[in-house]
Amino acid sequence: MKSIKLNELIEDLKLEKIYISDNYKDVEIHSGELNRPGLQFTGFYETFSFERLQIIGEQEWYFLDSLSSDERCEVIKKFLSYKIPALIFSGNHWIHDEILSCARERNISILKTKHSVSKFSSILQNYTAVEFAPTIRKHGVLLDVYGVGVLITGKSGIGKSEAALDLITKGAAKLISDDSVIIKQVEDKLIGSSPEITQYFMEIRGVGIIDIQKLFGIGYIMEEKNIEMIVNLEDWDVKKEYERLGLDNEFEEILGQEIVKYTIPVKPGRHIGLIIEVATKNFKQKEMGYNAAVELNERILKEAMRRRSK
Figure 1 (cartoon, one colour):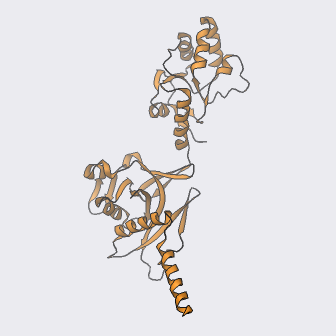
Figure 2 (cartoon, helix red, strand yellow; figure 1 turned 60 degrees about the vertical axis):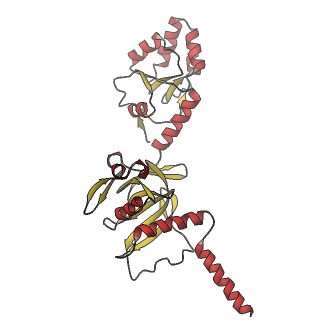
Figure 3 (tube, rainbow, N blue to C red; figure 1 turned 135 degrees about the horizontal axis):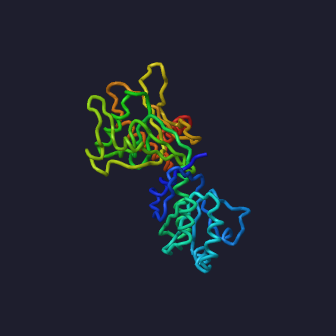
């Protein structure tokens, strides 16, 4: 089961630290669901989801505030006797001394969010949907070409980065990742991004490492992109029959998703960057309902029928 470290969640969701347990870097979150402990405060623990993050909303806070100090202490001690990952307070309410004292005693982190419970629940679910998503790494270059997420694959040295650089320099593409692409399946989409350490860097043989953001500017980079098509580069094989019409699409499966794939043979003299650009525009046309190969085929059939009718 996938998990997220509590310290990473605190940083990513910008939670305020009221009290931090001495082992909070080892605490793991396994669910994107929250638990509002209203029932537990009244003594019902039979179905307590203590493994979830616990959040105090308006109703829970006002209930606790209505209690005497001794009553509040008794309720919180019972509640924090369970090893919850952390207790989060929403809104701008102050936190009672009895709660802080018991949290220190039980070594449980107390956090705060400015958001309402419903808003924070939505933020947490969106965040964990990405963090818990099935993930793989794939060798290749990921670009945004005219708004289409294009994954360029092929063996090392085939010219993936050079073709990508060609598209970037002419303003046709933005770089997401070079060499290693992290791919997450989020619902029915494949979201590609770069390892943090190599983000926006490219390796160009004969030149070395270049920084796309520093060389060309922020308009030539993106943090992530939905992968919509694959361009696989391979050495030209004279014995192989390559697609010439494009009537039927080829697909490649990644994490159970079928992605349209173009196989482009590489040989001296072929402008691979231009071919990828044209393939992307052709893909967009097909997505909009127009297929040039089908149009040509229909014209040929109509002409054949016209000649037969004479």
